[in-house]
Image (cartoon, rainbow, N blue to C red; front, side):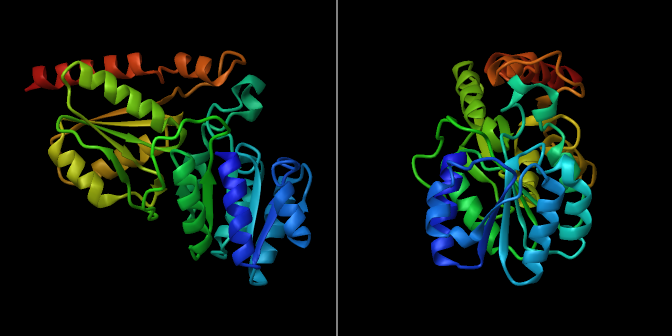
Length: 312
């Protein structure tokens, strides 16, 4: 995802001289093309993310379209006050790009995990939260974010994520993308777990459970029409995310459910536990610990479907 982001941003900067890139001492080689073409529009702000955010806010006030880029945990938690007061309070068009969202940097232990970032940023007024599901969605998300009149948090994976779309789909902020139609279960995925959602749907289909897959790339604002349709039509709606079960997509959807009419579907939230990791390990290892693998997701779906039938 990060390579697709760098290439698309460089192309867009060639079309709009207001775009400036601020880096938190990361991605220097990846942005060589950007720096070569626009040397006066690249700023390495070092390991001073709070300052980088404030600088971006000042640039936005001067009519520029700044993009801040570094590891997701550093570009959110470390500078949360600056995001809230310098950027969001003034509703400035600053794009905050966090790379390696979720468990992507799990081998570096808790300091590099970002399993609370969606929860923290989505509750800040004026903030839009976008989590593209593959490289094709990254391109559309970046273009939409730079056209948006306000702050955007763009949560990216790291590298090597498989593409789900064969080509770039239409991308609209706040409107989910149906990857596969189904009749019984609806999997709502956000961010880099979209390939996991597809594999889980394959496993459910093999068991005779018709499953729809949706890329909910925008966590704020939610796609209210899509949710209304899903909870009225399916037996079970499951949210999948590489983020805490508290406050992310699952939390957002749970809040939505409480504010609307009683639904046909039951809700299952699949994400990381409300706990720090037991140690360090690669991303797939950590996904196994948190049950973010097709086998565990299928088992939980089956159990909840069975329980919902018994309750009737």
